[in-house]
Length: 107
Image 1 (tube, one colour):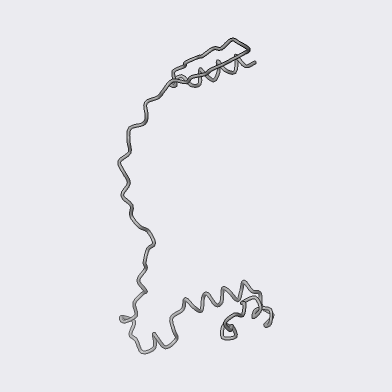
Image 2: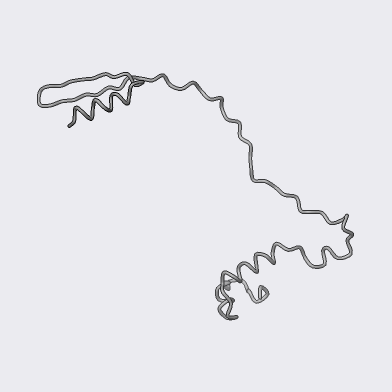
């Protein structure tokens, strides 16, 4: 059926003309293209037949050494209500306590 495929003709059109599912035709064509030519293995002894070389698309990349984590900074919260402004500085190492304090404040 793949021989029916002419340049510019879609596989779907060929499949429809022959009453075959287009996805099935694509699979058959893909499998046929992957098989070696019928005469290529004829006359060879089993020792002469070699598997095709597998080429990996993996490319090793040299990554920079991991740097030290940035020093924890303080959490800074600025609140303003009318003319009154409050700035709170909280150690980042106690972020969960800061979150609990904020929840209570915003109730």
